[in-house]
Length: 260
Image 1 (cartoon, rainbow, N blue to C red):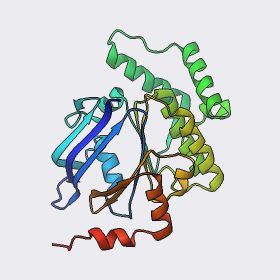
Image 2 (spheres, one colour):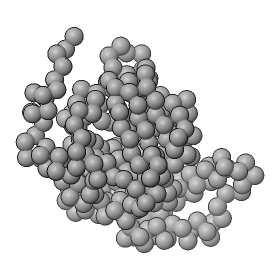
Image 3 (cartoon, helix red, strand yellow):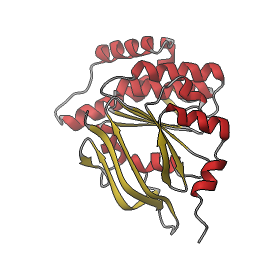
Image 4 (tube, rainbow, N blue to C red):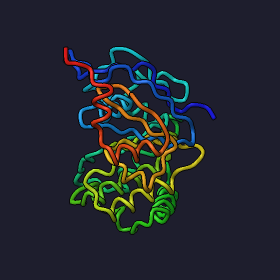
């Protein structure tokens, strides 16, 4: 299978600051694979997610990000999205006054317009059929589509809305940035089952998490450990279990670089 995402010697920092957060990240994810990225707080995991999607708050100082064979570093976040990249946020923002359905219909139309400037977008009946099918697949009440996006949502509802967006937009790369953050066991299971339902041979998934518990539901093919801005360990699902049992102290002892 071809590579969906190739990260080569990626260095990045907060725009305008001197200290690098990412210090030479290398990672390849192929179609159909699920990778988990773990590591202690401050190791650079969420920075990597933001850099992959082109957050302008970060500056890439060295390296490459290739997506479907294309260098995306000069692309805006919306261009990366239209190519098939998707980021589920750790803290999704609320948009009062914009319903979930309207938000998603506009997102689909933007993609269609980018592919064909003459496109009139998805018809309302077709969009309703699509939404119904995706919500049924995720076991979601259809009334959810009429609510304002994330406005008054519980933590679990916000994360389910992210998974619904992923289902409707059908990306080829899904980056889940600490999707398990703030979820109770029931919400975690529901969200994870939604991700599992979307997995397939054309979808690559990168799950960013502190804890092994989400990996009980979203089974990774590979697990990576990030520390001080680099991926320092890679292995199978047993690596996550080792972290669960032993914590990150052994990683710190093995890889800590003295402060300059």
